[in-house]
Every structure is written in C-alpha cells, then in structure tokens.
Image 1 (cartoon, rainbow, N blue to C red):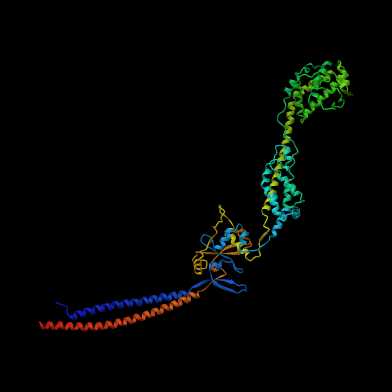
Image 2 (cartoon, rainbow, N blue to C red):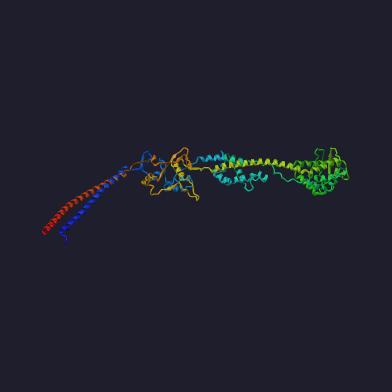
Length: 612
C-alpha cells in the first residue's frame, strides 16, 4: 500500500530538521574555534609587545651616540671610536667578510697586510738603532767609504750572505794536520777561496767597525797560536844493530891501545866526523874539544878534503854504508840530549886522537896532517894510548845502549808534547765556541734587521688590524704554502647584514663573541699582538650592545591583531545570524511537523472507528 502524501511530507520535514541540527552544530563548533583564534591572536600580540631587538651603539665624530640594528657587518667593520669585537663559531673560528680574508691570504707579512688597508709608511726608528748595535758608532762613516746608503743591504749582499753560511763549518774544520796550514788559517786559500780573509781585509779598510761585527772580527782574527811542532815519533833507531855493523868495519878490528891502534881509531872516527853529512863536513868547520883545548880549522886550500879519502891520513875509508847508517841515526835524532852528548863525546875523542897523532908522529902522513890539510893548535895534555882506548870502548858500549836512553827521553818529550797539545786543544775549542757564539749574535742581529719603513703605528687603524691579523693566525701557512684557515671562516653574504639571523645566533649559542681588550702583560695565546688580548665575552655584557622594544614588530603585531579580531567578530556575527535563521526555520519545521503528525493520527483514528 502506498505512502500517503502526509507521511511523505513528514519524512521530508524530519530530514530537514536533522540537517538543521547538523548545521547548527557545525556553526557552534566554528564559534568555538573563533575563541581559540582570538586567544592565539591575543597571545601573539602580547609576545610582540614583549619582544626586544639587539642594537649596536656607536659614536659619531661630534660625540653623539646613536643606535642601529645589530648585524655582523656593523659589528665587525672598523670604526675610529669603536670597540673591537669578533664573532666566533662552535669550532673557535672567527667569522669574517670575504674582503678581510682575501687581504689576509694575499699578504706575505703583517706589514703587507696593514698596507692593504691603506695604512701609511713611516720611517722605522729601530732601523738605525739595530745597525748601530751591529756595526758600531762608526758604521755611517764605513758606509760613506763604500758610497752606499743602505748599510744592511750592502753588508748582506757583499759579505754576510756568502759568509755566514760557510763560517761555522769552516771553524769546525780548521786543519790541524800540519802547523803551516793552521798558522796560515787567515789566508784560507785551501778549500775556502779566501772568503774570511777577504771579509776581514775589506771591512778593515774602512777603519774601526765596532759593535757586534767588531766583536766577531776580534775573536776570529785572534786564534790560539800553534807554537810547537809535530808529535815526536814513537820509532827509535836500533843503535845496537847499527853499532854492531859499524864494528865489523876493517879498521875497527885493528883498534888497540897502541900507537898504530890509535891511527885505526882515527879512521873509524873520521867516518863520522868527515864522512858524507858528517859532523864536520861544512866549510870552515871548527871542531872544538868540550873543554876548548883543541881546535881543528879546515883551511879551504887546494888540498880540500876528498870525500873518497876521508881519513886525515889519506886511508880510503872502508865499509862506507855501515858508517853512513850510524851517522844518519845520530844526525836524525839530535832533538834528544843523549844523542847530542854522544856526538860531543865522539868529537872530543876525535880531537884527542888528532892531538895524540900530532904529538906522536907516525909514518909519512904526519907532515900532511900538520901542514897540508889542517892547522892544529893544542894546549891540552896528550892522553895516553890506554886512556884513548878506554874512552873508545866506553863510547861504543854507550852507542849500543843509546836506544834505551833515547826511548826514555822520547817518552818524556811525548808526554810533555801531549800536555801542551791537550792544553792547546782546550784553548782551541774555547776559541771555536767563542767564534760561534759571537757569530750567532752577529748573524741573528743581521737577520733581525728591521725594515727601514714600517706601517704608521699612529694610524688609528693600526692596532685594530694587528689584533685581527694575529687572531686569524698570524700568517701561519700549510705545507703547500697556503694560509692556514683553522682560525677563520667566511660569513655567508646573505647573512652578514641580517640582524634577525645574528640575534638568533647569539641568543641560541650558535655564535659567541670575543673582544680585543688592553692587557698590560699581553696575551699568552697571541703574544705577538703586544699589549692586547682576545677575551671571550657574553653578548649581553658587551658595552656597545643593548636590547630595546622592537617597535616595528609591535606595530605589525598590533595591526595583525586588530585585523584578526575584526575578522573574528564579523565571523561570529555571521554565525549568530546563521544560527537564528536555523532556529526560526527549525521552529517552523517543528510546527509543521506537529500539524501533519496530528492530522495523520486523526485520520488513523477515524479509520479504526469506521471498521470497528
């Protein structure tokens, strides 16, 4: 059975009522959200009213103080009356603009860095002071002699560059292998090309060069003197063997305590006295007995000694080699007293033998002995054959044992030589050390000669950029020669003028601040700066920074708040109107619903009555 029109209408009204209730609920929820938006707008406005802004204060030339929004560029740029600050990141690097970094990395020294900022050059007062210290009071006249105004350049280019690199090594390598090389050290012709002699001689021509240079020249020009010879040889001739060979000669075996035997003794002694390189072979030789009692003068007449017949009695001397060997051993060791005493004994005995032969003429050679070859003058008593023979035997016994005496004397000489040598070596080492010490003072001083012109320290920018230079690393470089950038980092160009970013970075610890402050004792970390130091500082304690209300932010927040509240009020009014409309419509629909429902109920009731 179909639905009646009333029932259909009733369903329609029910649906509309439900829709109205849903719409009313939605509008009510929207009104509730407006309350939240109103609260948020009020809160944002209150925050704006409480907001602050970091400001940087600076003085103008007339002394007036003005503030501007704090940015990295404003904080870091130079100003005549500004305190110097730096911004430091979490790695300890200072943040800088690209211009400062480019100038730093392009500079080879602090001086170049300062000049790059336009700081003027001025005469360096320490330049003349250091030159005077090095070269003495008369260095100016020295330079006048050389016709050169640049003392440091002249000295360096002419002498020091080629001199100091060689001198220390030369001092260590002084040749002690022979006395001649050492005593002529200042000529330095061997292996040194005369550089030290040239150095001293050229400087000496200018007169007295005082100061450090004169100190060095005084020391290096006065080395210890080598006043002793070479070390005595350890080897000593085997006199016993030499004498044994000599004793085997022909005439030696014929010597006896007789007149004939003394003649043979003369042959043996003549081999030593008149043999080749013997004791008496020089022209006009005077051989004198040790007591001065007999003298033999070579006359130099046509009958000069024929060395093939060296005996005064014209006997040809036999066994020449054995006599020459013994003679050479004696002549080669005359530095020993025992050898000299032996030579004197041989000469004394020879004089006594000649005196004996002159008095006791033997054979036909007596005339030649007295008148032809030699003039003999004797006031001494003639010794007997036995006395001469006894002395002869004693001499040969002493010759055989001479080596022991020479050994003892030689060791004594070696010991004395060693003492003297050791003393000399100590003196030489002390002199070398004095040379090196003085040389180091000189070369260090020359190496530290300051520049003739320096950046003007009276420039107000000077200390600012000195502080910055050493905070950036003081010119330290990497192994490849590039600047070490561990101490600095470039600021993004988009942030350097952004005040909001800088304030946020300081407030949240992304960046911290340092201030270059006067320090009488200087800085341990940056000692080159002088009487300044970089000290960490909390940004809120910086004298030039202050916080103030952010008027711009407040104004913007107020406009936004008013606009938001007006919009909320308008929406609320509209929502109220919509709710009233829905309420009116709801009442009308409810009334119609009740009317139709009543009509339907009555119709049903009549129908039941009709069929009952």
